[in-house]
Amino acid sequence: MPAGAPEKRSRAERRDATENREKILRTAADLMAARGQNVPLTDIAEAAGVGVGTFYRRFPDRAALLDEMQRRGSGLLLRTLARIKEDGLGGADAIEAYLNECLNLANQLVAMPLRGGKPLVDDAALKAREDIGIAIENFLAEGRADGSIHADVQAIDVIVCATLVAIPLPHGPDWAVTARRHIKMFVRGIRTTHPAPPRVRRR
Image (cartoon, rainbow, N blue to C red):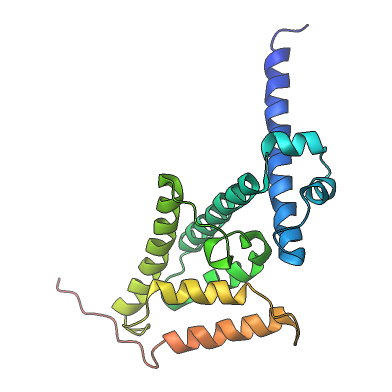
């Protein structure tokens, strides 16, 4: 066997395992969003294109799957917030971008606590939720500082709005259109009519 072959095979196996894990979690979220959290695990495995044995080696039961879906959801939100900051958005513009991304990610957030998931209480999960709140609060603070966002708007207001727009009504008009309209109205509500002029700094 050529030198380095076992290492290459090991890397390929790890890559395949990571891809299978992501495929399972993404598929589980889509199916649960459509059919509820009691969708048979075998249906998830089949839709993800993995064997039942592979599925159960990674997720021995529904609770383990839901826990990992919640961790993944928190990670998606944190990466979204970081990307918005990197794009140079702040204040109400950042909040609007975040809410629209939450709508885009709606299915993938189905296991989050405000969507009915059992809140994880380990240190990593608690820190992730705290970091999400801090990132949102920082965007709001920018808007308060320049006078473009009302002083009484809190991070929880944004979090609740993000949750609500991610849950489509069972009957009614096109939800994507309706939800984006709601986001526009929410953001218009948190904005002040006339942002304060820029501060004059002493030289």
